[in-house]
Length: 161
Length: 131
Image 1 (cartoon, chains in turn green, red):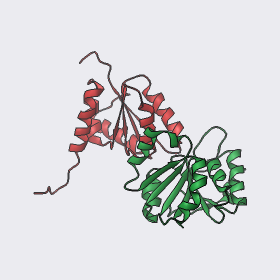
Image 2 (image 1 turned 180 degrees about the horizontal axis):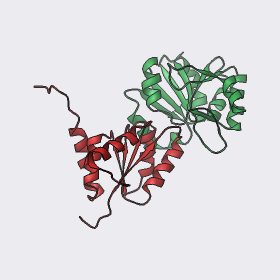
Image 3 (image 1 turned 90 degrees about the vertical axis):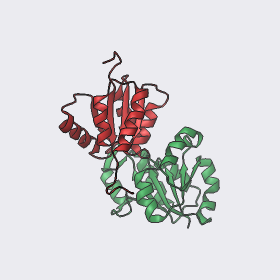
Image 4 (image 1 turned 30 degrees about the vertical axis):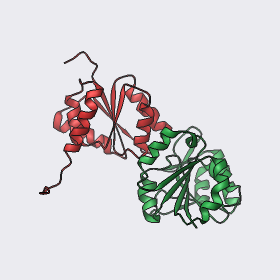
């Protein structure tokens, strides 16, 4: 599989992703699925600063839905990122992520969100989206860095209550 | 001293780095009042961090010192400074740059920026030197 990691992280491309995950997975491409960022050249330039020599792809959700199966088999080691759970859920509803794992890497404090880990705060909408992801055959866990112990979806949702 | 408003410094970094740097400045150069303020990205999302920078900088001319240009601190600083002429972002902050800053806050931002970059770079050396 060419998409080695599906990650939800508000910060998208940053140190943990590039140095932590990217280093361990020998990532050659970062795919950012975000409607707003796909249309903002100056913000894309910010993210390019930190990607080392890897390729960066910024696409809308619609474009990602059309390209996902290609990325999954084209042989380019990739990390796919969204900044929220909803976008990942919508991507998975294509049916092309069955059997994949989604990593929750960073959802921070915001109104309506409850802390479940230092780096994960969940809203009721996040809960619902995570459950839908799991129902679609996606394994969900939280882990900020590859050497850390993952926290299962069941534990996340239990702490949310 | 010119009549130009003194420039404020906001240090934005991972974990406790900003607080530690400002503490080190005060131990070398003495207490600096509100010349430098620390901001950590710990447990903060991008919007919250950007809002905190805005609140600390206000409408004063400000240098926003960040540790990494490519992380959440750098991104928030760049976003808060975009299209503003009264904010400057310096990435790769180190102690020599902050020490120079506290003694030259009366300079216009346009002069302070290149000066601080030079001070920060000049302070990184390896021993023994090559050649």
